[in-house]
Image 1 (cartoon, rainbow, N blue to C red):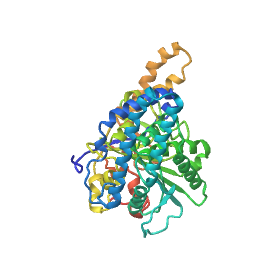
Image 2 (image 1 turned 90 degrees about the vertical axis):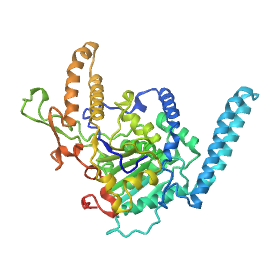
Image 3 (image 1 turned 60 degrees about the horizontal axis):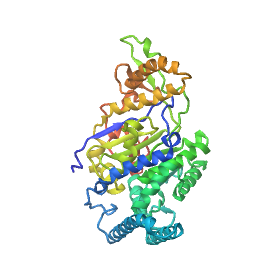
Image 4 (image 1 turned 90 degrees about the horizontal axis):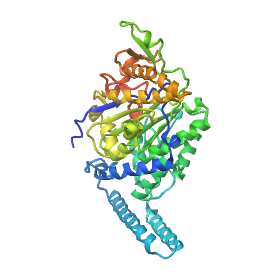
Length: 465
C-alpha cells in the first residue's frame, strides 16, 4: 500500500439548516438496527487484517512497535480472542444438549468470569495522565484535553496514546480508559452502545469529566479526542451534555475523532435561521449570485479523520455519510479521508501519517490539495431537507403537491453548497468565505486540529509549520 501518495477526500460538515437529518438510533427500531449492524460488522470482519496494515513501524509510541511490553500485550490479546471464539462455538451445543436452562446459564456465566479474569492484566486506573515533560510557551490553564481510547486497548496502550498526543499538541492529556474485554467482547459492547444506547461505565466516566471541565469557570475550551470505540463514547457523552448543559457552556467543546465507530454525532443549530438564502433562489437573475449563510452550531468545531480502508471507519463514519439508506443520518462535522490508506491504530496509522512529530514529514498530509466530495455533500443536504419538508406536511395531498417544489428548492440548496449554479457559499463572519468549503484548498487550510500542534494556538499557527 502506498501510504505517502494517496489523495485526500474532504466532506464538508452538514449544513442541514432545517434540522431534517436524524439520529437513526432514536428514530428506528433498535432490534432492526442491531441486526443491520451485525450484518455490516460481519462483512467488515473479512477485512480485519486491514486494521493492522502496514505492520512495520519504527515509532516507539506505535502500537505494533516490537517492544517487549507490546509483544506480551498482543500475545495476551490473541489468546483472549481464541478463548472468546471457543466460547461462542460452545454456546450453540450448550443450548442444544445441556440439561436445563439453569445449567446453560451457569456455563455462560463461567465463560464470562473466565474471560474477565483473563482481561485483568489489561486493566488499570480509570484515568491516565500524560507523563511526557512539556515546555509550551504557557501552561494552557484555560484548556482541558480529554482522550478516549478505542477497542482492544490496555492501560499501557492508553498511556502511550496519551504521551504521543501530548508530544504532538504540547498539552497535558487526560485519558479516559475505555477498558477492553477482548476484541469480540468490545465489538459486542459497540453494538449495544450504537443500537441500544447502552451507557457503559467508560461512557459515564467520560461524561463526568467532560461535564466537570465544561462547568469550570476558569476553563474556556475543552478539546475531546476519540479513537475507534472512543468515538462512540464521545458521541454518547455529547448527547447527554447537550441535554444537561446550557448552549454557552457546551460551546466550549471541540471534538476530534480518528477512525470513529460512532453511528451519529449530534450538534444542534444555535438558531433556525442559519444557512438560509438571503434572497429566494427562484427569483435570482441569471447574473446575480446568491449567498448562503453558513449555519452556526453549538459545538463550532467537529472533525473526523479517516483511512478509506479502515474497517472500523467504514462501519462507523462511512456507513453514515455514504450508505444510501443512512444518508439522512445526522453526522455533524467535517470529514477528512486518506484515499487508499489502510490501518486503524491511532499512533501507527493515523498520527504518524497525519500529524507526525517530524516537521519535515507533515507536508505529505497537511499540504495535500483536497478533493471535495461534492456528490456526498449534495446527497446529504437533499436527503436531510426532504425529511424536513415531509415532516411539515399534514396530508397526502400536501405531500404530492409540495414534494416536487420542495425537491427543487433542496437541489438548489445542495448545489449552492458546492459552489454550483447558484453561486457563492459564504458566511459574513468567515473571512475566508466560500473557500472554507474546500475547493482548491489544502488540509492545512481546512483542518482546525493541526493548528494546535507543537503547543500553538489556532490563531498563532502559520503555514510554515
